[in-house]
Image (tube, rainbow, N blue to C red; front, side, top):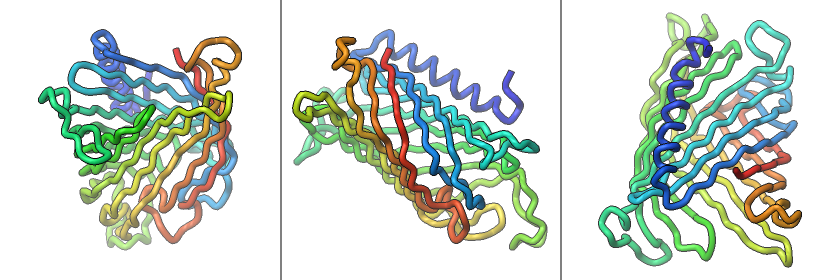
Length: 290
């Protein structure tokens, strides 16, 4: 059973998996993978220590008659440098992302193409998270906006501009905060814009089948935080260079990928001027495509 704070995340995960299952039944294409990544240089706001994390990942992407779906669930296990609530053990986090694209070219039977852009989509979705630290975050984020789909020789390159609204929770008590009544525990941030660039670009390096993949988010300021301090613009990039080791081992294309990743995060969650808000973390990564 999920704890009460995790029930919305569990419901969201079930909904996403149901959508993925339904779309896969009428899918024009689909790709499902289980991944793993590990790094030792992660950061958490207010924590000056490097944090090691094991991350188990489930990803599903599929296309259908009018567009495509994307689901990603990360289960993150920290070491003791990022402790769970009332414990010396590392914290556990779940982070769920769902995105849907409605392609103009499929809806109107003619792509909205211009210059390097092959089509335009209307994209929307949500993020959900929960983590069992003393802070006890419960992020709820909705996003909607246009996506430019660029014409690349292989793979994809998408640029989206989202209008975003975010809600979250703080389980801590800051009696000396800017507010005369202390900090807020549940907050609705100001709406903000997110610029999102996502890519998956396969290529060959000599005889080696490779791919360069990742995403970059630029989030605008979202007003005051839990203690009345102004948030800052936030940048997050997570990218990796992967080798199709399964193909080299005779297992077929797009089965087992091995590679190195990098996470770049500035003003994490909109925090600024405190320890642990900037991350530069190298990662080892695996992907097994089902």
